[in-house]
Image 1 (cartoon, helix red, strand yellow):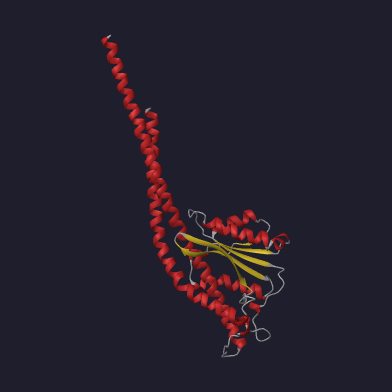
Image 2 (image 1 turned 135 degrees about the horizontal axis):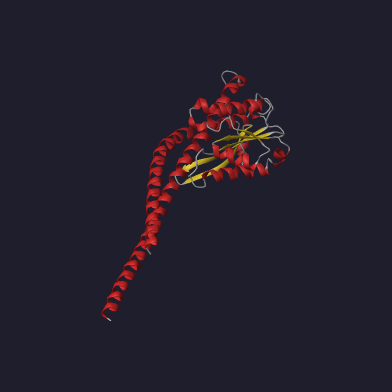
Length: 300
């Protein structure tokens, strides 16, 4: 019985230590989340408005000045950017993004993967490990795995600049980005969006009024010069938003996971204490019975 009590005591001590770790990690993630949430909250309205404006402009330039970054062509070579975290302990955050990316590859890009015409850019170590294991014959780029060490606009823009160079050089015909969109600390939405070519605004078939309205923009300087400068800048801002969204989602997911782990540890600790008290009670009862039995034997 003493061996059982010792085992339960060790387990109680182990659970308490684990709870201290998960509670500390929760507080660290909460502090990081506040900064990351502020960054994406400030960036998102600006980025979304720029992206909408760009799609609107390109949708109204049919037959006029256009940009190579908005020109769709037959997709013979494709690229997909998978953005995850470098560290784990954040619940299903990484697996949800990887699952969305895998569905995209095994669906729309299966022909390109089989033909060796698919390039996968990995941001975050979890993305690299999963893609290398699941799609070993794909061309996997690990140059930006450690991008999260520096989330400045200039550093993140290196990725979008390379994607734009490859698209303009006809090295890829289409680029999608898989990341997690931050909603709140408890909800992160895995998402795969088209990055290149710039998607045009979609108008409902029934929306005849919207079809007749063209964007009345006054271009100064010329359309060609403006688009040459404007489009890459907007795309860099959009890609930066994807990375910041994912960064905030990671800390939200980790904070939620550590909070749940601490809560589960508390429940396990209560159960272990009940087991310990029962075992201790049984041990005391057994000792009392042995004493009483010994006393009775002596009297006999």
